[in-house]
Length: 350
Image (cartoon, rainbow, N blue to C red; front, top):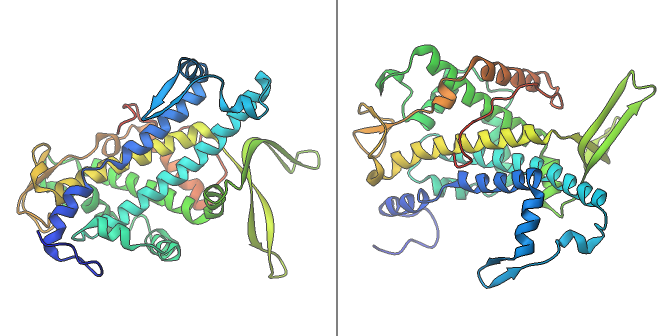
């Protein structure tokens, strides 16, 4: 095989090899491991301490003995618990943002079935350019119920926007509801990405956010009263006089909710990845449902795929919870907390 040109678009002959390499990865597993670590710290910190006391190895490195936090002033159980809580607050929030942005990038890189999603993903290097793409697809000018948007979701996740071509075909109401759920999650993560970019940037650049338990009250509390886990960060905002000034922002965090949303993003990545892998890597087309030939499968005349029962056949409780969260997003009350969130029951490896 001839070498890839150093600049410009690779020759079409390179795309099959690029796609095979790209889909050998499993991006959802990265987030699964980070979620696993988060859950271990939250639910079994003593077990982790015991492992370190016995000693652990990584390559040529080994670690044994007291925790790192013990050497920076965590000399009481209360202080150590506080530091652990701060980690959980920050990590759950940052991880949700990271997973949501990754899902959006993967979705936009696959929408339209470009010859190489890896190249499509890599070519979007400007943060402003990516924001424009997200705003154009999921912003105020784009409707969730737009048939074109739902058809794009179907082709990206299920290789076809004609459910009758799936074998067995899903019931019409299940198909429509499944696409609406996926579109809803994409829009939720898009709103999070666009509206809370300063929070995620504060975390990425110098960890310039302060996690902790915060209480805020105006007057006697009848106007405003809020307390609980939160992060604080600084953000440039336009004041009433039109000038941009630095402001301290408090963002309330519900860590268990963020964990569920992160896991849901990982499930969506897995489903999107399975469809993309089937579309672009001919050698893996062995399992799944049959699908009749059509223009959606650009690399072959026949294909088969599976659609996720977790998304296409949601329980009424889970669907109602998602609809509630989407209503909150639409009304601008982003800090409100839905009482129920659809919780996947499968293992962490989606």
